[in-house]
Length: 574
Image: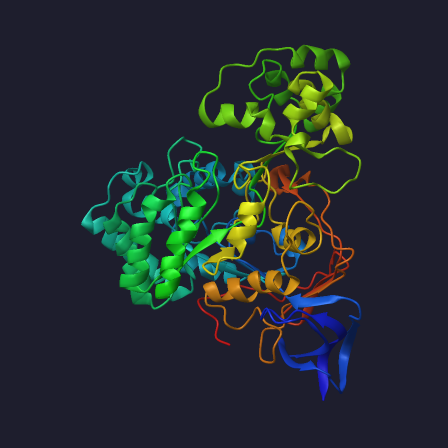
């Protein structure tokens, strides 16, 4: 038999969690047709001897809703072996969109997900109003990966309720009925779920919380019932982190009474450092009852990155920052390199700050140097002795001196790392536990979002570089387990039964990896969004090839230009 492509002699971790084995993989017409010892010929063969071969990663928490209208590569996720991505999380997106609400939707996304508004204003190719029309617009593109979309609560509420919805006023019975119909129509047209946000960290640029943040249970269940009527769809909820247990009751009832799959964000917070354990205990209960309720957990601490070009940094409230903020990035780097300016700035008194801003900019014991400018790999599990506070104390200098010099490293592009969630104890042990619970799924990488503050789209690669081969401060996790967790497990949560396994009949989404060379360098700032918009990006080394539907999309880290991916509509049958 003549195949389209044969991958020869790789070490196959097939996504089942079973022990890896050596074998060949034959591909024909975008699916895997044979695994084991493959005879016959192929249009192309790839020698994978000594390499790891896995299914393509399935990333269930991204924000490419705007980027997908102008960018077919969908980097940085595609750089990290992701072949399927779910977007439209956290209740924000761009449909439904009344013609006079475009700027409002951009402001909502900019405020919540830190994507430059100017980039979205220039890049978004509006050509829809309803959610089905938005899906049709996406479907006219081909991509390096497959994408799936969720109906966002914020856009739906603003569309139905106008200013009342934007300002989180209580929805009437008629409002709820109209919102539910929009969600049902969107899911029937191909959306894979609905998303909402209930965290106080998510605000639009006008200072308002995401519409739906305070939605009553009748509104939540009205929309949940729409998913039930449509016959599929995940209900994704971004929780308020510190009181997640108070939300658990309605999620459990929705899963039990409506049979709707519910997923929520689970992290450890400094405000309630033991709450995550309680949440796992509650998940034990739903696991025993086999209810479709799952937590979404991150593979590493949600880390705010701070540098001279980033959204936030410790000097943001210093008087001299106003002078620096007005400069171009190049001129700013020149200015901060001036010794006299350095002396002046580090000795200034910052303006008074309160709440979250004060916590992030002055908690020196939680700040670490991520990129020292020496080419070393970033350390995402640093010890307390590596903190800015500890370094300053050991050297007998002010923390501001350590911070200033760290941010001036690498030609003024040095970065600090502030692990906001999952690092109260100064180690990743809570993550290690959360990753192994049967009711959790790996997510929260936020690909496409938080352009000036967080760069976690590399988490799929990090799962191998850290948890499989690199961790030194605690137990690692088995290769086969990690592969399964971000392939078959994430695929099945959203009903993508046709992928996440290297088995005959499965979609030929595959990574071929040099595990010894697999690495992620420090993130850096790029200006490659529309309107010269900035975003933090992080590449990877060690991916020999990534295949989407049997077509090589990336080879040795280079984009081949092939675009075999597209929009996924609803569940995918095996």
